[in-house]
Image (cartoon, rainbow, N blue to C red; front, side, top):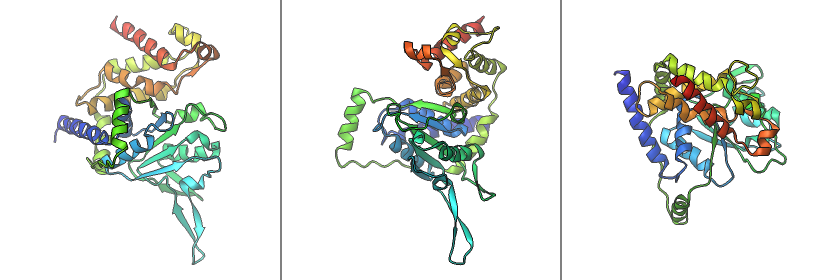
Length: 327
């Protein structure tokens, strides 16, 4: 089959997956799209939102639509690394036997990841990076695909352990889950306060996901798009005498690293493919710029005091780069 036919098939399956997920998830269109995009790119996502916005239901619906295994870990201050990756126990024959932890799944919901100490956070983040865990010197490969969706509550910060910037960088996306609109909330209340149980149907298999994950990196990207992505990331870095942006110099302490450029290009490929196009455009880079960059930019005190959000800075940087590229 021609690669362009495969892209068309991916687009059809993508639309079908969204339709199935929205049988149980009302609204949150952008979060659903970006979660699917992140999974097909091979990254992991950090989901920031207050409790009660159907984060668990979203991950459950994703797993069902894709025919994947799903587990949830509720992160607490007393959670140990072995509670995530597993441990060895002494069996009846007095031999050590490895018991797998909940990380051995296709989709893992790490609920309130900032509630647990750094040592336990590091155990999960290592498995995200390596796609494997090591126990007593023995390496154990994780299932394929492996996708982590970690959540954080943006309100309650007392008794939490914020993820360091180096560990935040391991997440491809930072997705903001907002309150539903009035009409969406009406639908939610109407359909969840009665005996309503419309199940999400499976649309594709893990083999399909592996196939498309192999296909997407083969999509050609022009130098123009690569330069566009790198130019956006470069303007997030203060102190660049040759290329700088007034908002960057005024409100940013640290900018995004090269991994942001890699994710912008990789994500643009996936965004184009999911929408049935065989090569990414500038609009594909722009569509994922905020979730890729917002957790990789460190604002200074002045930005916090004046209420300047990271998204506002990213928008301004994109507009500046678009004008420069158009010259």
